[in-house]
Length: 72
Ligand SMILES: *[C@@H]1O[C@H](CO)[C@@H](O)[C@H](O)[C@H]1NC(C)=O
Image 1 (cartoon, rainbow, N blue to C red):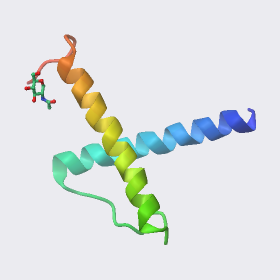
Image 2 (cartoon, protein in one colour; image 1 turned 60 degrees about the vertical axis):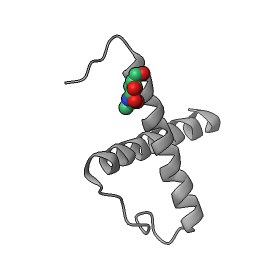
Image 3 (tube, rainbow, N blue to C red; image 1 turned 90 degrees about the horizontal axis):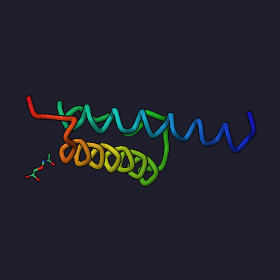
Image 4 (cartoon, rainbow, N blue to C red; image 1 turned 30 degrees about the vertical axis):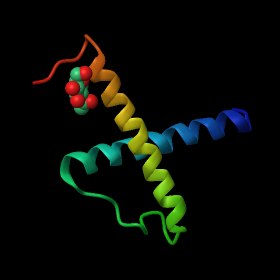
């Protein structure tokens, strides 16, 4: 796979993990400790989790408006 292909692949994987973390946080209040990925700058960690929450919220909004989903 090309370098760009790999970069895209890993980015999508990272975003998927971030989105799952956002969903867990919304449902359980459990959020990962900030040293989950080692001693990263807090700013990057917040941005990473924020990206997941954005995708989560957008997906929920989309499904909420979709005729293919209903509330149970
Ligand atoms: C879902 O859509 C309804 C009607 O548009 C809205 O009132 C409600 O706040 C939405 N819920 C979520 C979780 O987005």
